[in-house]
Amino acid sequence: MEISLAIIYAIITCVGLIANGVVFFVIFAGREIGKTVTAMYVVQLAIADSALLLTLPIFGLQKVSMNWSFGAVTCTLCHSIKFLSYYAGIFFLTAMSVDRYVAVAYSTKSHQLRTRKRTMIVCAVVWFAAGCMTLPILMYARTEEVKCLMQYWVGRSYCIYETWLVVDFIVGFVLPFIVITISYVMIVRRLQTSEDKVANMTGKRTISMRKRVTRMVAVLVICFVVCWLPNHLFTLAKIRGLDLSVTPCYGIEHFLVAFSFSNAAINPILYSFLSHNFSTRFRDSLAMARRRMGRRGSMATALQHNPGTNSPE
Picture (cartoon, rainbow, N blue to C red):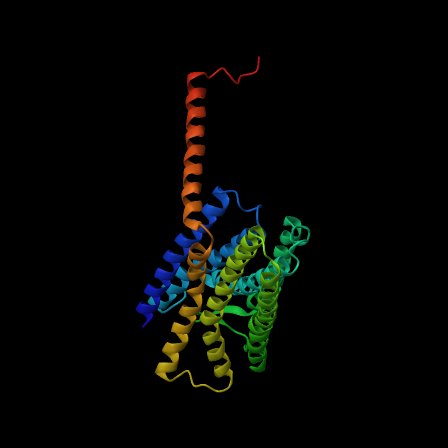
């Protein structure tokens, strides 16, 4: 089973890093990072996913070798990055859902409300909140014998561990999911009202474009829930007395964790397929990158032939 998990981790890592790399390339090469609020959020989500993916090879090697040989610092760092990426992911999806509601409900004022500066502040707050939620991991992730474990119960009551799991589920899943659900219920109602009022083609195209972006964010949220909810439920079952010494339960737990990690690889793929004209933008970004490289090559050649051109007189 350990070999299978290591292979799964390797596949998730390779697919995820390549897919996130493509998303980064399209957004940065196409200079979209400052053009739309959604692009700014997608970049932050891709950063969180990529950080998580970079820890998977280390966890995969632990599965194969059956021991942790990377030291206590790496143990703490890997667990911290894993949870930081998770919290950042769900918090950014929540922010994107609220942003979608603002874009739809306050269409005439959306450019004033959804500015680049405000979006950067929201991103900073999200990372700060995710960092605060990760503090317990920095405190309790330790190596014990040959394993990298979360030692919440060492020298303390086991109830601290149970309490943290419940808080993790509520703050890192239930509350964001409630906010996201309310946002989308209000979005659907507002879109239905807007469609009834708009008669001209320009207005209909605007609504259609907003629907596409809203649909993309909704699918990202659904994917996150599908990937992470089983793992959360299984973890809650553990603190309710589920016996993990039973072989099937042990195997299920590890595969559910791997399934949760797969969300980091699925997100950029979904964005690529659901984003409007992504393939066209990818080709345009490639062409733009080639032109830039061509100009740099021409300038370098010119400087070689005219070495004294830029020298001071």
